[in-house]
Length: 118
Length: 116
Image (cartoon, rainbow over all chains, first blue to last red; front, side):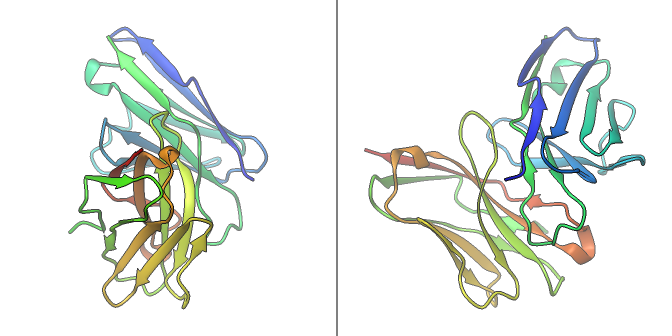
């Protein structure tokens, strides 16, 4: 089955620094990747949708200058949390889909990244 | 209005018994898909089962089945013969291709605890 790898699984950083999270599709070409954010005991909230080679589309209320998304290749998308603050501490999880996938295909998720900003 | 509603924040079930997790949805699309995912405490999202809006039969996958009632806009997940390893967060999700493309919208989730 389709495999999505996300790295790192956990990261602790100091307030004011930037953190990059990688999402890779290992055995398929991911034309579209989705980045979700999840607070403890809450649902997954879509942050942005990225299509390979084009700018990401951000959901309302998500700061695009703070959460930089790059989808430069068909197998890699990155989320960079810039100038991180403690309120950015959360679980970030990516998912991917390939080209020509029908609407009834499930999204394949990475294992998520737990970010703690101190 | 909420697109996906899961009204049970927490559910408890005895091992080996069946449990139903509720999910109702709201959409104006004629064609849509409903998904259930399991999220253990480790965080990964595990796809369980899918139901399409035009599917006439309820979906089944091993111990998982979906009680799909289109007129009531509900897609409840039934887990039979619960196991301790079923303890996890369960999310119902919907895809609306016409209005939202391939993204999934998730409900609030239900925390299932299986007791020995």
